[in-house]
Length: 263
Image 1 (spheres, rainbow, N blue to C red):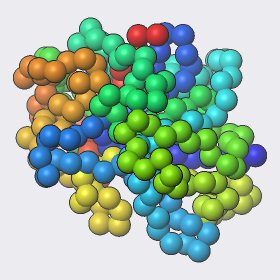
Image 2 (tube, helix red, strand yellow):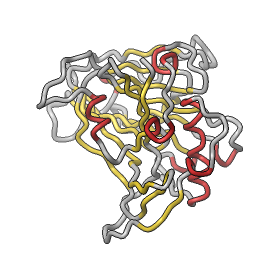
Image 3 (cartoon, rainbow, N blue to C red):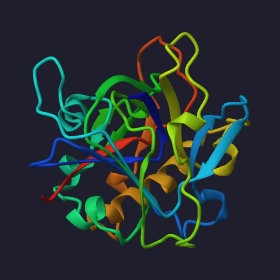
């Protein structure tokens, strides 16, 4: 069966539970944040003819991989995420958990799209190393891109409509991996997908995701309702400062975060 490489870019909340080795990637609603801060969720890939496709993800949940026991050589996705220092744990900062219905339910309030990863490895996390961000007095590098490798993914993808879906008869974002151009240099059985949850200017092909520090603070507030926090205090909005390191930043935003589910 196919091997999948899937990237998550920008405003994603990575949720792990106490009794589940899966990672649930939640994209929070940005409704009410104004037109300049409205985010679009897109599944980005090249089709068999090499054409760039941006399929809307709003109103859809995707399940990838099958649960597997954890070993020292192959951590479950949840363990790998929890060990990754670049993915800031908002549950630790707030003492708040994500409700189970947001990661498993068909009507998750405030979640516009969800991807659940049951198995696979976490080979790559990208972060802006030009700056550190301060939350509650602690300084962090923050990831903007997280990549999973998942083997033995069925060709036909497992989609479930969410309660926010505008049309129950709408086509799924991508029916099967066989519609995707295989990765160059592979055995034609390895495929790459990218999930973007960004403002319109940050989508391919224009790829202009950079925000000011104030814009970042505004966008960041959309994470906290998923943790049951409706009134966000200033210490939970990131302040940008110098990293005090000499490395150049990669292109991207600093939006990938993690939290825990109360399961």
